[in-house]
Every structure is written in structure tokens, then in C-alpha cells.
Image 1 (cartoon, rainbow, N blue to C red):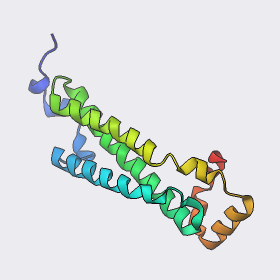
Image 2 (tube, rainbow, N blue to C red; image 1 turned 90 degrees about the horizontal axis):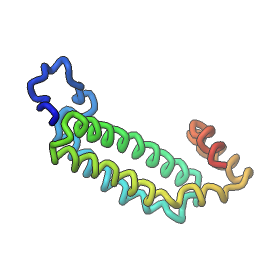
Image 3 (cartoon, rainbow, N blue to C red; image 1 turned 180 degrees about the horizontal axis):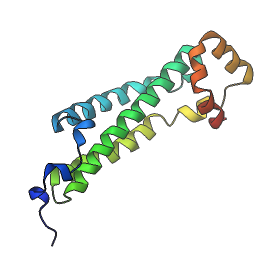
Length: 142
């Protein structure tokens, strides 16, 4: 049987406040991320309608990935502290479910992006230079 870790001095534990100050902050960010994922589905079928759409969808995808990573890491590490705590088992499960939801929501992205032509891509970058920062990512997709 494992020992209850509640007796450990704080200096020997992870400082997860650098990720989220409180569990309430985690829950707020989780709910916010779920809502933003719902909004992201509006780009399905419209990714290449304009350079602006491509930039907005790409920035949203990258932002949601970063947010999701924080959500999952916090939940996973909280659960690892003591796997007997049901609350953190639920957090970790919710974090894993968010990855599935992200994949489902952005399933349109790669297939739609693959339809871009060299000419269209160059025109988009010329029109919206901010797309250049994603050049490596786009090259990997193509």
C-alpha cells in the first residue's frame, strides 16, 4: 500500500502554481478551451477562402494546442501526485478528452490545406505576411 504523501514538505513537491495558480483557474481555462473549440468548427470548409481565414484558423489551432498542453500537464501531474484522488483522475480524463475534441474539431484542417496551390500560397503570404511565421509548419503539411 502506498504511503499518503500529504506529510511531505512543500519543497519536495511540484510547484504547479506556475501552470495554474488554483484548481479553479484550471477549471475556468478548461471550460474556456471547450467553448473556443466549438467556435473553431466555423472554419471547416472555409480554411482557404482567404488568407485571413488561413491565418486565423492556424493561430487558433496553435493557441488551443498550447492551452490544451497546459491543461493536460497540470491535470496529469496533479493525478500523479496521488492517483487515489478522484478529482485529479477526472481532471486527467477531461484533459485526454480535450485532445480528442481538438482532433475532431480540426480534422478538416490538413485535408483542406493540402488543396492549396503554390500560386495561392504565395498570394496568401503576399497578402498577409504574418503567414510566413508558419512556413515551416505549412511545409511539413505539404
